[in-house]
Amino acid sequence: MALGAYLVGLAPEIYWLDSSEFVTASWELGIAHAPGHPIAAIWGRLFCLVPVGSITFRVGLAAAVAAAFALVRCSQITQLLYERGGDTPARASRWVGPLGATLLAGSYGLVIHAIRPEVYALQCALSLSLILEVLRAQFSRIGVRAKHLTAAAFWAGLSLTNHHLLAFSIIIPCALFVLLLLPSLQRPWRWFGVALFVVVVGLSVYAYLPLRATHHPLSNWGAPNTWSRFVWTVSARAFAKSTAHFSLSSLPELLFALADELRFFGLFVALGGIYLCLRLSELRRAALLVVTCIAFGVFVRALVGFDPATPDDYGYLASSTALLSVFAALFVALLVSRIPALTHARAPWLGGVTLALFFATALFASEKYSLAAFVDTRATYGELLDNLPPRARWVSSYFQTAFATAYLQKVEGTRPDLLWVHRHFLAYPGYREDVLAREPEWSSDLGDTDVTPTENATYVFEYDVDLASALVPRSQVVPRVSWLRYADGQSRRFIGWQAILSFHRLCVPSDLTPDVGARDAAEAEATSLFGTSDTISAIRQGCGTEMARKLVLTDRH
Image 1 (spheres, rainbow, N blue to C red):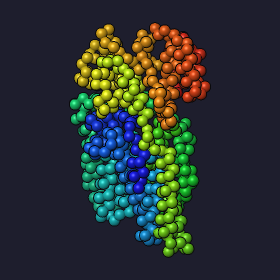
Image 2: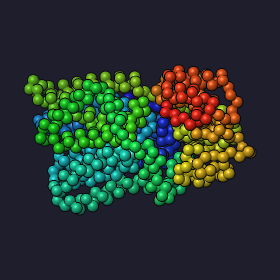
Image 3: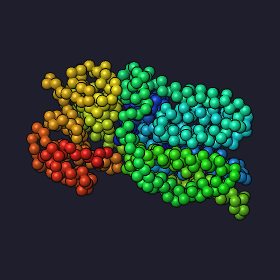
Image 4: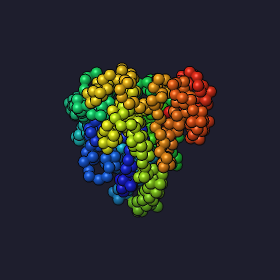
């Protein structure tokens, strides 16, 4: 049922942020941004073969199926813990698992990544699979314990090939827990060797990166066909600056968002579930593992910062939300199991709660989270490319523009006459060589960090704050499409940023003829979208001077 709800809300066209990149990487078996996400590209490519809807819809279908698998795993974890928690009739236990999954099914962090191409639903499914196998090992007989731990090792290796930072947030507490189980194995060192081999089997998916990089796909982050580039891509060095200064300043906002994922009341119920599970000797050790996984997941996102207006940041919370949903369901189920009056009505009572919660969640989520009518990104960038001059050299500056351009050219075949390069990728290892391998016409234009135009070609630069003054007259911002409402939150942020860039472009000293009317109009539009922000005020104060160029703009999407 949840999968059906996700399909109803699935985006038919590309979304903002990284969605278009993941569609391109899946379609052409390319390499997405660090750490490359090879398992996501392979998973998405399998669904590209399904003859239903657009390519974007098919890759989104892969995310929806992964989200449904995460719900299955959440249900299995809930049922396993409930069955180990005391007197639990089989009829009642069948409803407890779906109750936990239902709480997760309507959370924003899972839904928004189940209805558009992304990697977080898949990561949630992989993480919950790892936790489930470790818990099965905890509760299984000694003779079969090694089997479950070996399966856990495989899921650990596989999860590292998707989003390794999130994978480590689950692997570390699980590994510490497994150390407590090792003495119970008959031959622990033999199992350790087998587990290490199985982890390597899972990690072997990373061989996809150099194998595909040799074919120079359009989506080829880091061009990892050499050892140094492979390490650069997998280690995510491109994002080193954003994670260099760890801070927990965003922790309050993050905890608020996590509470909102469970509708606040659900969080208090989950805390009650944690308390009950820690009180039960049969569940205490397992509960400690699950609580530690929740804490690690929240801590990792807090370290790199949290923006409540960015959907991807909620993807980091999906596993923690799932595990809190488990505890919330356990609180209700364990409480019911200890009420004598409900001894014979336990199964129908839990079934009624589950169904009522599911339909309430489905109604709320479908109204708030659907992307079934979303076309903003495709329409905006499609009109941008359509209006570029014939055989122009298009130089993008913003990562979303780069991902959308690659999608439109590779997947949809839009404007094959354009030569395209992204300025800010030129400093990345292998990018310049990769571009020249596909389009040697750029040989006299590409420097180590930027593009130097020649006289015999038509250039259009996407404006950004670091663009050289001499290139400003050849630049433009991404224009707003007149017939679009831009009702989506990310759409509003995007056009707001473009309005600020337009205002900034008309204020920095350049060879551009001053146009006071256009400048005032750009300022008015930016103010209408962002209000009187510090960024707009700073541009206004430095307008026409070198001070405007030196501004560090903080409202970037």
